[in-house]
Length: 260
Image 1: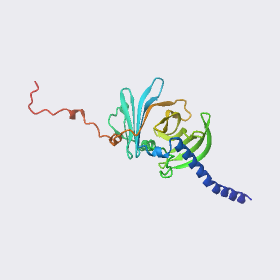
Image 2 (image 1 turned 180 degrees about the vertical axis):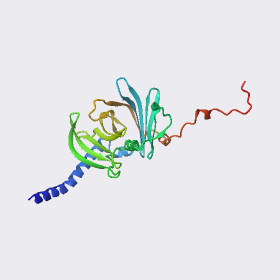
Image 3 (image 1 turned 45 degrees about the vertical axis):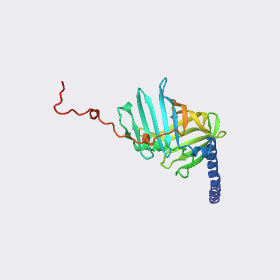
Image 4 (image 1 turned 180 degrees about the horizontal axis):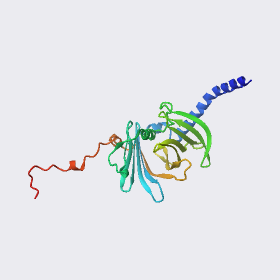
């Protein structure tokens, strides 16, 4: 009898697979349409976001994020009169961290490069997920800010895992949970998306609140402007060479020159 029950469950699971796969694809199709539609999304070759991050009471940091196909990104943030940079050129990641006394660009650690790869994924992990080598699992529904949302687990080709919450009514992503590494430790970062606005037929969240799952400390990013297809030079995504030493900028003195 137990064997027959096991066989029945196995058969039921096999017949359920096509339906589950179709459900995932239907949710993703609804999400793509809600964002503006596949044709409009594919017509975008570059994006520039400008805004500010609130990282504590009264601590507002200007932020600029630029994205360009295929898979390039650059983020700049200014604090204490200094500008930090994190960038990825489609192959290598690098940063400039003057807050840590590092004024020259330096290569990123491999874990950080993987995060840059994810952020540079222009259309997000759901669009063309099969072609990208990602897998998507439907985990049912869950309440987000009082509304039902589809819960999709996305495992990227590079091994990073992200859970996306798609609002049942609007089809927009309203929350995500990303597993990542910070200072060598595994953490889960939760992001809540709101204040959706239309820019050239595409929908963008102008407010993003994020922080570690379970933590009461949250950071908020508020966008001031979204530009679709701005002119972006490829060179700014590539790591620049070190600045020449200060002495190299001084012209050499001729032997016997008069110093009076």
